[in-house]
Structure formats: structure tokens, C-alpha cells
Length: 273
Length: 221
Image (cartoon, rainbow over all chains, first blue to last red; front, side):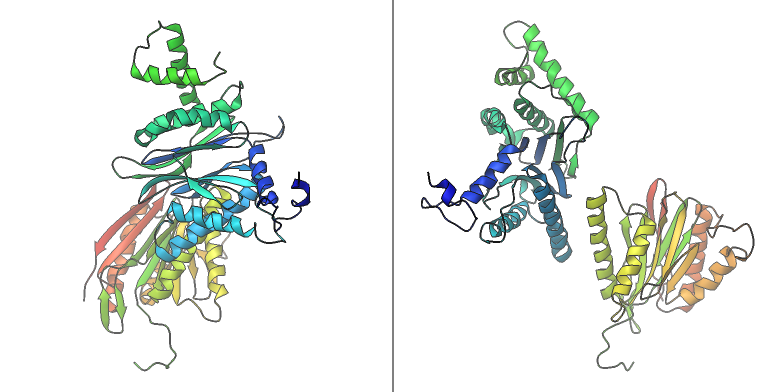
């Protein structure tokens, strides 16, 4: 009822104790196309659904490498996200310059959150209209954080943001408990399945999604944050689809545990034809 | 040695050499760190790999050199983020020149030689003074042993007069192995007479396949 009176600028509280401008900024995040993040003990994966302004244009970049050990996926005002990515990159470089060590992911998320908070307490600024999933690897393992325009941030095992992300969140909620022990390939498959949920009927191909991974292999070598090549993504999508079709053709009982996993995927996907 | 009360520099000695070939570049430096008439360590690298086709060797004041290398490496990382590719050697050459001139009135006490492959895959060497004046050449030596080494390189590698037409490439027609042998010979000679050069020689060879590193023992006296 009072929303319109107290929402003119970010430095005005509403009688109910809310800052409407900040909440409107969080709405902007929900308008952006979907992004998901998930992590195991050693690897973190980010995936984004690519949205192009029109058939003629290229799609917007939503996944950015911030350092060798960390990257972000964003949803919302991509321009704000680009500027924040540049900030995060320079923070990582400066930290490495002074301390000769990579910036721990929790501190990276904290710097970003503090920067976002400033914009919620200045009358001449507006909040950043972008939500970021920050994924990275440091001495304490792989991490995934979600930073919102309000300046809040939380660590997650798996999360999804952007439009139609609820479908992805539902998918992830059913499966996240096993993620700590997942292999990188399993994480990638689940990330792609989660993105597929948000596409709502549209076919998942390597041209309408981006996937990036960072992690530490069993032998200790670090795989730096990198987007996965389109051809490889298409291979994984094809193998996922082949596995989905096989149980549908086979008899009632699933034949192997891996097929069972895909089977559960089939149950969760409403658009499976 | 009497110095001004406010003299903030120190020369840690050492020599750096680079030779450019048709499709390779050799960058070499000794590994001795000295101060005054003493040796601080026999095993200190003066070489910094800034990009996959770009290597910097610097001699002079190690305090300034360490920071100069760190600065350039950070700028290269930023370039990678912004342009989605590694910095080319000629681009790094210009960046180094600008970085040095930026401190024209409190210079980096660093004598630099930048070596690598240019965008066409040909070897290139850039040689600098302390405040950023630079030139692309086919070979160069900097540091305490440079005056001993440069005449020998001129003798072995200098292209005929620049007045000759058609213009001849400054890069040497020598093969990679011949260039590395030449580098080993000149360092052995410089080590004989220059007290600041010796201990070990670090040789980095950059070619299409990547980067190779080699260590050769030098006289330790």
C-alpha cells in the first residue's frame, strides 16, 4: 500500500523497515536469463543459459573468469556485471601482488558484498542490478557464493538465479546432498540438466548454454577456471540425451546405477518428450 | 665506497644477453647476486617469463627489478582478461618502455633486455636503458659484462651496413643451437674478466613449440 511513497530513493526506509529500491534491484536479477552453480569438495561448476537480444545478434557473455582460481556467472543488468567483474579481477591481481597468493574465495565474495552495500547507503548511487554466482578454489577447497544487490552473500552447495530459476532450484534441491563426492563430469551433467530445466521446452544445445569449471584434481594439480569448449559440451549433452532415451526404451527396471541416475533426471524434467 | 647519504640504489651486478633468430629467440642471464665485493647468492634468476612468447631479463638493482617484473606480470594478466589473449612481445616492449619512463625522475635501476617472438613468429629482441628508451634489434647485452660481450656479438652477428639495399633483417641466420653455443662462449669470456658475472648461466629459448630452459655452470671466482 505504501510502496510508492517510500521507493523513490535508496536512502528512504519504508515504515515496515524495507528499502524498496534494493528490493527492486533484486527483481532485476530475476529478469535476467538463468545461471546455475554447483560444487563438490574439489570442483565448482558454473553454467548459464545464453540469451541473445535477437536472432541477428550474438548472445551476452554471462560467465567471466576473474582469476585462475575463480570466476563469476551473472544474471541481471549485464553492464553492471561487467563492471563488477573488472573490479573483482583487479582485486585478485592486487592481492596476489601484495601477498603472492590467490585471494581466498570467501574474501572475494566479501569484497564484492561490501562494494554492493555502499550503493545501498548513498543517495547519489543506485544498487547494482546484477546477482553474481562466485565460484572458486582455494586452500580450503571449492566454494560457491551468491552475491545479491543488497550486499548480502551466502555460501551454497548449489544455486540457481535468473528467470525460471525455480525449476532449476527444484532440480538441485533433490540432488545436492550427494554433490560433495561428485566427479567433475557428474557436476557438469547436473549443471546442464539444471539449465535444461530453465529452458522449458527449448532444446538444450551447446550454442544456448555456457559452462565453466574450476577445481583441483586428485593428484593435486589445479584446473584453472575455464569455459568448456562448445564441442565438448555438445558431446556431453548428446550422451545425456542418449542415456535418457535408453531407459524409456528398456523394460521397467533400470539396468545399471548410472542409468538410474539419468532416470531420476527424466522424472524431474517436465518437458521430456 | 663512499656514496651520498641519500643514495637509495645498489648495483647487484650481473649480465643479460638476448639473440633473435628467424623463428626462435635466446635470452640468457647469469645467476650471481652481488653487493660491493661480496656475493649474496650464486643462484638468483634474473629472468621473468611475462607471456608465452615474451621473456624479460634484467640486471641492476634487484629491489627495483623484482617490483618491475611483478608490475609487468600483473599488467599482462589484466591484458589477458581484457583481450582474451596473451600479450605479444612488441606490445610488452612498449608497455615496458612506458613503465620505465613513468619513473623518469626516480628511475628503476634496471637494465633490461626483452626477447621473444613477434606476431609473425620471428625472433625479436628489444634493448632498453634505465628510463625506457628502447629499440628493436637482432641481439643485445646489458649489465656489468655488457661492454665485454657486445663487441663479440657485433663481430659474430652484426648485419652488413644498414645502407645496403635491399634492407637485410637484423635477425641472425644462425641456427638455434649455434646461437646457444655463442651465448655460452660469450658468457664464459665475460666471466673471466667481470667480477660480477659468473656462477651459473640460465638460458631460455623461445620458439614455436614453447619455452625451454637450460643451466650451464660458470666459473665461481
